Image (cartoon, rainbow, N blue to C red; front, side, top):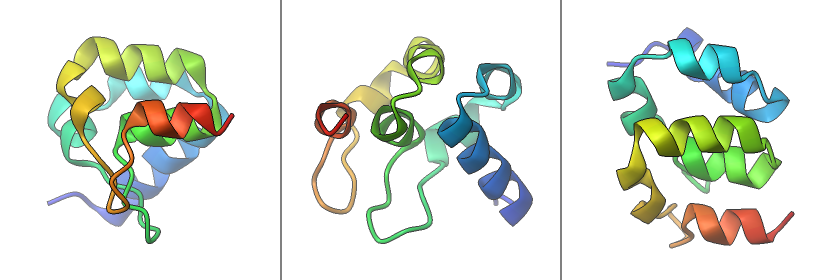
Length: 84
């Protein structure tokens, strides 16, 4: 189970573009993480939404399957990127 500290720290890193933090996060955390809002974005979707390209690239490199994951609204990371 993911602690709220990890949940919050990763959310902050994705928003601010802290790619070094993203590189240190365990793979299973990146794969399982979802935003705590009503959208439930994956880590990749959240990085795309915030336009933090370096984080997006790192997550995509480590977890390519997240490219196909959808939010609770049915949006992929590509949809999220189009909002920027």
